[in-house]
Image 1 (cartoon, protein in one colour):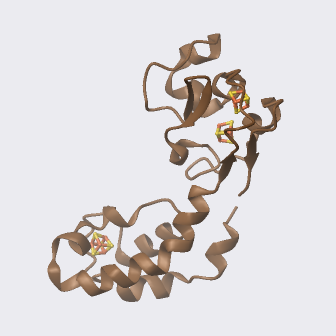
Image 2 (tube, helix red, strand yellow):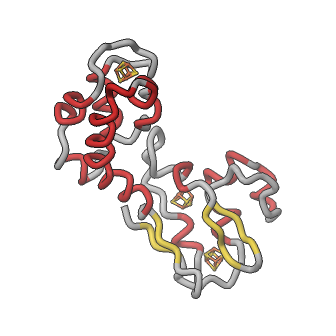
Length: 159
Ligand code: SF4
Ligand code: SF4
Ligand code: SF4
């Protein structure tokens, strides 16, 4: 399912600002990279020439401005109201992404790694890696388990 914001931007707008060398250092052609960037399947940083070659500095600046709405959509994918959180940990142990990253979490053990989506710290939920939420590519699952299991209504799935 495409993000609504992706309809405002076109791959061509992004492509025009990429180096257009098709060097494939990112693993794709420039046009394919533009499409994947729009669908949040790659990050701008994966186009290393853009960052390493000063001649692309202005293009980089423009690209960062262009894709800012996409990044902000990602940051607000899930909203957490810390004041409402009672630190029960339901979301931490129910999140399929958390469990896949650290299976022991399913037994109610707080994650020992910081690689998970979120954990509970000092009695409050702490977001660690929102990019690992399975609503993101490549999974694009219509998951909102964390929201469902949070009886305090501290989690809201936004996008
Ligand atoms: S690394 Fe950048 S310049 Fe090279 S193919 Fe990918 S998008 Fe194009
Ligand atoms: S939406 Fe699903 S995958 Fe994403 S954080 Fe919540 S439970 Fe985890
Ligand atoms: S389920 Fe809700 S109350 Fe419990 S830790 Fe998660 S956010 Fe906090």
